[in-house]
Length: 151
Figure (cartoon, rainbow, N blue to C red):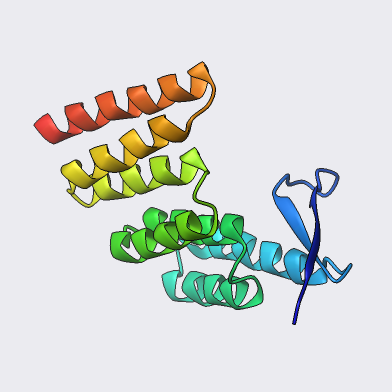
């Protein structure tokens, strides 16, 4: 069984995701991060390859919410909204207090035409947001959704 021992932020190597140290070894995380980066690079030109890289990252870190979130965002960039929603729901399941994941789910639902679901997700984000500036961001997103719905 793999044990998660410590959460760190690594900024020196160009990213600031929380890193879950697995038995003192970050090589799995670094490999998954590289795979996510390669998925992003291929998402516009070779979606099949991008999906393969994302799948590899998800196999390495299936319970790491930021990896799952990144996979969701890559699916959005490919307009694969059902897959994106599935990943974002998983990220929320793994880290239910992260308001940004709810905001992301709201955007995915809006892009797929589910405006009622989008509003519900953003309202959940507003409830979780602790700072006034983050609440303002959520309210702004609700306004954008209202405009999109009218177009």
